[in-house]
Amino acid sequence: MQRRPYGVMPDGRIVEEFTLRAGAIEVRAISYGAIITDILAPDRDGHRESVVLGHDALAGYVGHSPYFGAVIGRHANRIAGGRFTLDGVGHQLDTNDGPNHLHGGFVGFDKQLWTGHVLTTAADAAIRLELASPDGDAGYPGTLQASVTYLLSAGGTLVVDYHATCDQPTVVNLTQHSYFNLAGPRATDILSHELAIVAEHYSPVGAGLIPTGAMAPVHGSAFDFLRAHPIGERVGDADEQLALAGGYDHNFVLSGAIEHGLRHAARACDPVSGRTLSVHTDQPGLQFYSGNFLDGSIVGRGGQRYAHRSGFCLETQHYPDSPNHPSFPSVVLAPGDEYASRTTFTFGTDRDARSRQEEQ
Image (cartoon, rainbow, N blue to C red; front, top):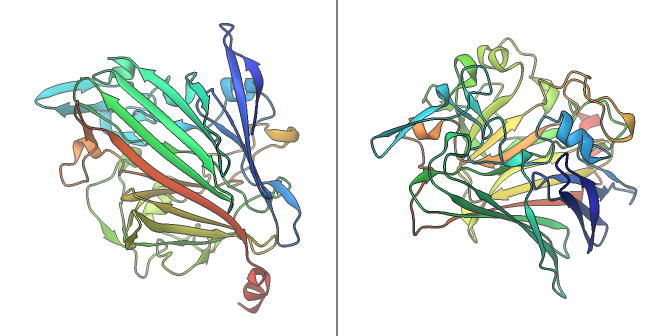
């Protein structure tokens, strides 16, 4: 476990960097946006490389970053019109995505400075990052005390725990927005990655990528990842939903059985390197985003331009626009209650992945 200064905010505040190590896995996070700036993981031959998109310095995250590695809040994903009603009172949020609210507004949790605490024990390395979101922040009601804990277990699993309390009723939906590319920093895209998602339904969207409220079966569609498929296999299909989003940018309704408080949500594998990523969560949904809006304009780590579909996101969360859909699982948090959620990311290798793909 290492802790050091990472950079200086425009207002002079210091941003810290925390490095967690366990075996061959290394995770780096900073107090700005609770951002995971880097994850190093070995391939099938033990060669360790970065498997997430990011920047070399703070300026990249402060200047222009599409939520690389950040914790998203107060409500992840989109809220139609930036409006919702709670206990009969209407609330108007920032509209930073056309007419809609996205990922907490203009200055969401991803653009705020958190306070870091080291929690490392003899067995595991961990940090807790805390943030106070005041009443009216981006239009949300109530003061929210939020925290995220990153724990890297000895087995190479990154455990992400979210907690929040409030002083008046509000809505909360937190997630982690890392962009993964298991092939490493020299890979140009993620289209050959094999992805499985344990979901029998997904949420169709309309204009502005707002859910219609329906739950469509994945069977027989480009959204069927119950069996692993390369991300690029059907992303260009003549499908209205893919056309609306420019690829995959949809909520998948997780259907796996809950064991020990978590359900298996997804598994990704890069057949060339053999690197794998397994995701487990207690959340009801998974937003799979195939990097549709990356266009080469962002220069990231090592001077690399992040081209179209050079990374993918697996965002565990409640459904988009949940405050406006009573049939969706509730995101309301009341005073005296605690928001608590856990997601785990386990990194490994599959020695037979390349031969299986060649056989296909």
